[in-house]
Length: 146
Image 1 (cartoon, rainbow, N blue to C red):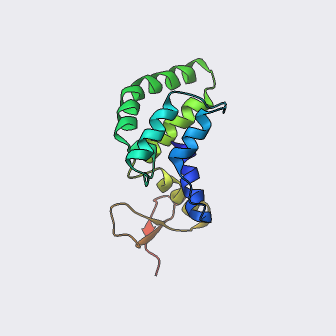
Image 2 (image 1 turned 90 degrees about the vertical axis):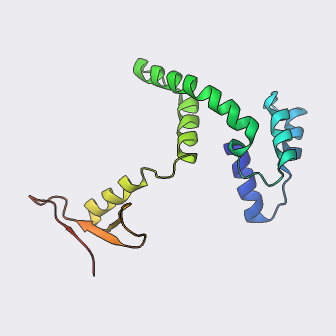
Image 3 (image 1 turned 120 degrees about the vertical axis):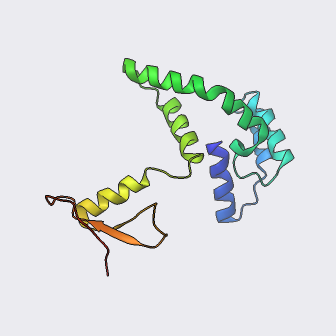
């Protein structure tokens, strides 16, 4: 899904007019990526040539849904055993990021505010309202910039 999403994005950015279904069929004919999923990818883009991400296709949504629990178990057991599984953990992280409305970027804003008083937006307030917290004072006081 990520690779095709990147191809779509680059195609739009540079005006390449990529046919992602055709790209999948080309790979099927002699690339190291040969797999039965290439047929499913081709079918997904035949159903919807403007598909933004394969994860939004009914077939792939169903496949991912049925495999997610096993993937989580694999990644967590590997982590506990100290076995690196970067492709699996990155795939799981991408999936969780893609389907999440709110992400840990809020933590990044808080860190930037702590280290450089860059302010942050709060999720419980209207967008565009910025805040700063005196993180290191005895009592962390929040103030709104003027």
